[in-house]
Every structure is written in C-alpha cells, then in structure tokens.
Length: 283
Length: 270
Image (cartoon, each protein chain N blue to C red):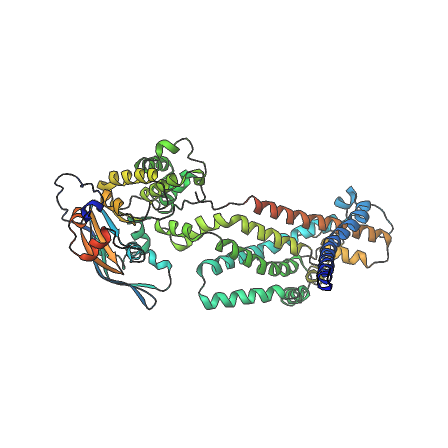
C-alpha cells in the first residue's frame, strides 16, 4: 500500500471516530442529566412532595405543592398573553402581510427571541412590579408570555404557509372572504403544527428562572389570586440548591426531576401530535 | 394523402335545431390583462351564452385560463395582476360588484381536485354555511341535492362523514363540482377539470356537465379538443393572448374562418 492510500484510510478512520464520539457525547449529556435527576430526585420523590407546603428546616415531610401549582398558574397567565398574540401575529405574517412590514415584523420577532431572559424580567419588573409596588404572579406571567411570543409567531406562520394554496383558492371561489378562508379552512388545516408549536414554547418557558426572580419572586405559602408573589418550580430549585441544608438539596433534585419530566412529556407529546398529522394527499 | 377531414375530432351536435340563445349571460369587451408590466391578454371580446357550455381552447400559455380567472375575479389573489376593459354579468359590471357576491354567482372548479380536509358532508355544506344559505334543518337536503346533481350521491351516501380524501381522484373532482353547485351559481367556470383524471372519470364528468346545462351556464377551459367538440355548444380559440375566433362548435371544427384555428384544430401545432 502506498503512502497516499494509507494516509487516506487512516484519515477516514480518524474522522469517523471523531464525529462518532461527538455525536455520542451529545446524546450522553442528556442521559447523564437524566440519570442524575432520576437517581437523586427519585430518592426524595414521595407523595408529600406533591401535596405539602414547604416546612421549616429540620422538619420532615416538606413538599413543593405551592410551587407546582404556582408554575401552573404562571403558565396559564403566560398563555393568555403569548398564545393570542403569537397566533394572530403568525396569521398576519402568513396571510395578510405586505412585503416591507412583514419583513420588519419577522426580523424584530427573531431579535426578541434572542433577548436574554433576565432582561425580560427587568422589563416586567419596571412596568408592573414598580408601579404596583409588590411582586405578583401577573408580572411573572407577563414576562413568560412575552418570551412565548416569538416562537409562537414563527411556528404559526410556518404551519399556515405549509397549507397548499389550492385550498385557499377553493374557499375563495365559493364566496368566502379572506378572513373566513383563513379561519374556517386554513387554520383548521394547520392546527396540528400550531398546537405543536405552542406546546413546545410552553415547555420552554416552564423552565425559565431568571425572568421570575424579581417578578413573581417566590412564596413559601399558597398564593391567593394573581396579585401576590407566587412560588414556581424553577425558582424553588434555585433557592433550595444554594441553601446549606441537605434536606433542601434533596427536594431540589426532586423538583428538577418533576420539571424535566413535564418538559420531556410536552416535547414527546408534541412530536406525537405532528407525526399523526394531516397529509395533503392527492390521488 | 389523408386530408384534414380525417383528423378532425368527432363532434356531437347540441340538440336538433337548437335556436341560438338571444341572451348572453356574460359579456367581455376589450379586455386586456397585465401581470405587472407584461401584457397577457389583448382586446378580448367574448360573449357567453346563457344555458350553454362554452369551451375555450388553445395551446399552453395562450391566455385562456387567465381569461377564465377574470370572470370571477380570482386574479385578485395575485398582487400584480390587473385587468382593463369591461366584463358584464347580466349587464352588471363585475368589477364594481361585491367580490364575495360575484363569486357566489360565478363558481369555479379547478384543474386538480382540491377538497377541504373535512368530511364529504362538510365540504358541500361549506359554501352553504358561509353564505348563510341553509338552516340546520335544510342543510342535509341541500347537500343531498348537490351530490345528486353531481352524480355522486349513490356512491357516497353511506359515507358522508368520512374524510373527502378517502375518495378517488374522479370522485374528488365530482365532489368539488358538487361543492361549487351547492351555492347555486348562475355560471360555473371549469379550468381543465378532467386533465388530472382517467378517461372513465372524464366521461362521467362530461355527462354530468351536459345534464347541468339548463340550470347553469358553463365555461370550460380545455386542452383536449375532442372534449370541446363533444361537450361544448360554442368554442373560442385563443392564441398568444388574443381571441382568434369564436363561434358555434360545429362551425369552428368543420369550417374555421381563420387559418390559425384550422392549423390548431388539425394538429399542425399546439
């Protein structure tokens, strides 16, 4: 074998191994995280975790019921802001937009997506917490809702664009106005993509901590209504993890496991929704 | 050497001694059409007789589909498209009518079947619902009536709530025709409705078009000269954006006045 052949063969093997190792590393990071969480979190997961409030240090039987409910409430608020704005904004971009304005909207949406989450928190702090003079679920929900908007807009727009133009023409030719066509034919046809996009963006904001640190703050007890500071899983993890108590560390692991399980469930669920999606079959 | 007589397609005369209709359903006068700066139609003058089938024939890119889409203002989906001239429906200028109302009176069936991703029933009911044309009680009757007119009722009456996509191509196209008929249009525009279908489905659709004539004026764009000769009462020949000749089908195919028409009919080009 000549030198060139040997060099080519060994270069082949080296690159194959290198790329394979990188791929393996990517996958194993996820499994490591999962493994740690399942091992440490699984040990401290019990019924009390789900139904009890946090107890003073030293007492056993503490839980994070208020944080689980709190995360739920915050996600509901975020949806009220993020879903309508994202959905209708996406509809505008896909169906009604003129060239220049759509370009500007798309560009700023992408920029908004890149804004650091803590800056979102500062923004919500300035416009809600300062005037109200206290932390609240409203502020936290708004911060998360704004973070939902860019992804919701883009996935809605892409799902609507994927609907064939022939369907729109068919509806228009029957005497449907532009808006009726969109609402009664195009959106139902694109609904699976839209739902997937919303599930994914909810899963993303469910785990955000920085925007909640000085908007929703936290709460060791149940929060009434929407005007009080509210506990949430990510912030509880943060608080408990940096504290010096072992019991709290265990609870933080458990909370991490619950949060990750919810996010993974949403992602897997979203993929199942899209895989059974409508195919525009033509005979 | 075989003369052009041999290669002329066979024709079916539209009934014995049918009197030429005095009224014209639609009238186009001096119609130009532009896509941006590019002109696609030049001074088209055409009259669509009521209660008859009019065919528009011509080679690819000659403007026949462009003209068809002016009749129900579907060109408005293209931003740079602009017609000039006059088009009248029953004497009314279509460009000043409300476009939604116009499209209810002038329906369209497209080249490839485009049923909505809904059930068969909901496809037909769609036009009725959005135009507020039938209450809950009468909806089922109206749907049945449309499906009967489109010769599809017997085939689908037991599966009305199945997805429209479960039907074959020919059935889907008949579904689209039924859907267009449901809103009871005065004119039905058909853009090469059979070009994506097999000969048997084509024959079924041609038969149903023939049966619809008395209640609905039809304009059909077709690449298939034999189809025009079989189904249409009058035919217009388009070439490069101009209407070269327009007359009763029998005249166009037996005795064309223009050389270009004769060349096209006998297959010398196109």
